[in-house]
Length: 334
Ligand SMILES: Cc1ncc(COP(=O)(O)O)c(C=O)c1O
Image 1 (spheres, rainbow, N blue to C red):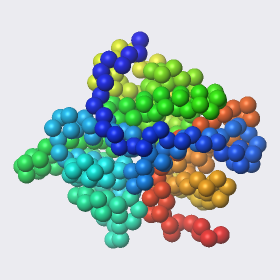
Image 2: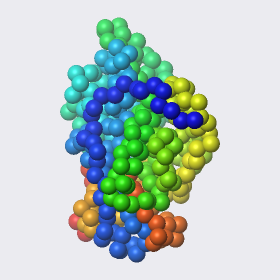
Image 3: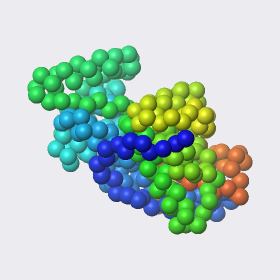
Image 4: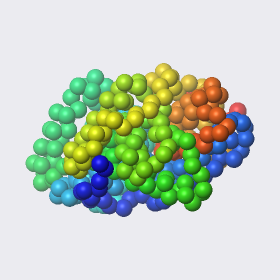
């Protein structure tokens, strides 16, 4: 049985509730399911996106443990890292980022904002990052301890048992949205990049009794990788918060096949979709996460996976600064 036995610490960072918006022109153009967007890109301005919901719990846990410094990690253009830097700055906390890849000559997008927000940053080659992330984080913790600071490590994307709470709460918010709009959607779709948004939604569906299928469109890796990762996040959540129900029985739906060349790399049709949606609905998507997943969703609609009797809710998880960092990849003037 599902119960809320232990309420986690939380600090308010996100502007909530975010709006649920019907995309009338796109729905007409597709001639298929009714498409709504949950505007989690409006959780803030520089604090835009899904990470803000998760960080409300991850940073609160760090503070509850007496930490004044956050160490976190991700790609050079990580939205999660940028959100962590700016959220922590607003709370008077220090941040050290462990970034995967080379130090850019000219910082842009999220990475530029990391610097503006005063982050300490170390860059590591992909293979070093992949093999030695734990050791790097531990040695940074020791370094900060020697300087009189207590550091807390948040994993990539704040996707872990603590971060799950962000989208457990979002599921409850969506339930209220559906009642307000008088709709009963068939599914909720999100871009899945490190798994925490989907883990939270899957748990939130069980906790709050949502009828919708929770569907992730993976933007990197593959279905198997995300099944394991989401199961791990939910299992950790169950242990941390003393839940007795069997998380392994919860359905994990992944639509694979839209990754393209790899993480952070989009095919020209993704950029065309970004342009089309911006011009038709005034909605900005990004090439790394939301644009790739949204493009995948439109392709699945075109293939007939969703029909005109369906209502889909796409979670817009933010990412605008990632689009700015890929300005040279597409001719947006055309
Ligand atoms: C804009 C954006 N959308 C979606 C995702 C994917 O969310 P998650 O990491 O929780 O799977 C991320 C981060 O990975 C993101 O930055």
